[in-house]
Amino acid sequence: MNSPDQVEAIKQQYARRMADAHKSVYLPTNPVNLKSMQERERAIAATLVKELQVPLSEARVLEVGCGNGDNLLMLIRLGLDPANLVGSELLPKRVASSRHRLPAATMILSGDACELPYPPGSFDIVYQSTVFTSLLDPDFQQELAAKMWSWTRPGGAILWYDFTYNNPRNPDVVGVPRKRVRELFPLADIVSRRLTLAPPIARRLPAWLYDCVNVLRPLRTHLLCWIRKPL
Image (tube, rainbow, N blue to C red; front, side, top):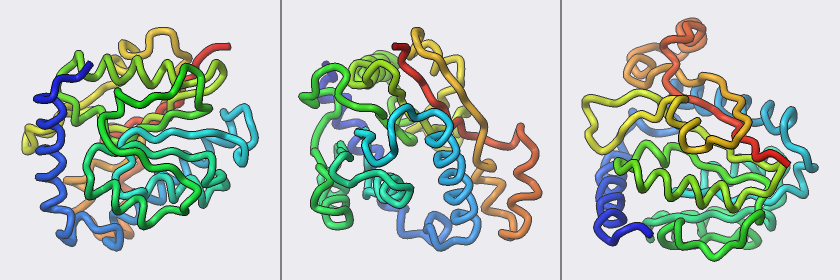
């Protein structure tokens, strides 16, 4: 079980990020950010079409660290039923924001995700987006990974989007490379692809250059993984 100190440290990390969220460089209306978001959404859509073993409208999804609800809204746009979606979020302000933005049929839960009461095999997809890079304690990462694996039904998967490199300018995050993903889920069948032009580079580019530079695979900093649980 996570210690109160660990949970409080994560709250403080995210509070520092929220203080910067209003800056134009981070806004989704920034053309480069929009390019990145659209790239990720297309990749997730393609992954679901190829890998998901149940109809989109029937898939049950839990997002760990749902933030302001952006990813759950994306899944609804892609055809998932709001009533089959659950979001878990640690920060009360983000819980309130998700609840305000999402349909009433979507359940939003507040608190430490490791304490969620779901039995094994409850979900077709357990989704995390840039959560694990905020977990600086390897044991904390392992505990949450084990919970996510438990909640995933056989034949279902963990959908993973996170960056792989350390950020020397941000001590609150640590990169999670594919090797570490494999360590966290040793029994899984993992399909992965690299996405997202490194933000420090992308933010210096005009939007029309994003796709041209993004063809250089070593400059892509994030992994999108389908971490399948065998039948």
